[in-house]
Image 1 (spheres, rainbow, N blue to C red):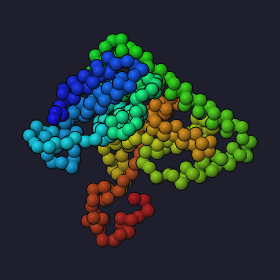
Image 2 (cartoon, rainbow, N blue to C red):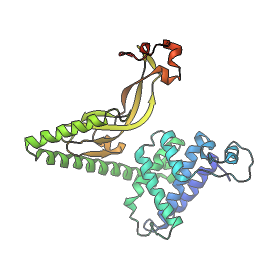
Image 3 (tube, helix red, strand yellow):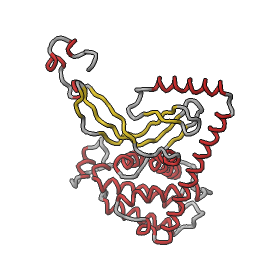
Image 4 (cartoon, rainbow, N blue to C red):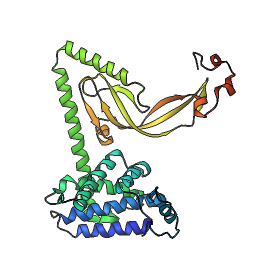
Length: 310
């Protein structure tokens, strides 16, 4: 068994070449291409550390990742590989995670069931996503589409990636337009009622997630909720009796409870020009944050700690 970046990348390259030699309308093309993607993702993790591929339930596997000879090392399943790429590979967004998991689902159905998902599978249904995921993983590995696929294939891949992005943008903008038209078709009383109901729902959700913020709905203009994925946070600073720090978030979802608009995935958020990272200020109790006993700091009187302005 071999978990080095070089060996995994070599295997991904071999499978990719097999794919490129196949008829583009046949089932072997997606089979070998998607199989190559798994090893490209594993190579991306191995570049960070081969230990990321070790089954955490097996000490032998962890030892193997550090170069120790063991009898039966086992690696993590593909879904966990993809999830870890989403956390560790720069530019590997939730859209890439979802696309990759969808492609791996086709692979699993082919290998582990009686289904034949690659038979009559339209190229446009999977190839743009495949190239988009490959581009990000290759960049992480210090490679390029051209170096991996060749100049002609790389040029075609870039065009397909761009076309997919344009199609996605049109689809989400059409959805925004449809919700705008539907909301405007309501009489003024109904619009106000829906906006009020939406605002009340927003209040119910306030504080339910550290990555949420309110924005203006691009369709109806009411208040909408944006949530996203935690990226990192600043070092905590003291403000009075509280710790304050800034949480950086990548927006992933917008939901308007007035007109019903829902936008999901960073690609769609980017299409409506709300894809930029944002920051939320968080407050923490230093006593809880550092696991301190309140009496050790504030004395035995609880009133010294649980006051109104802490």
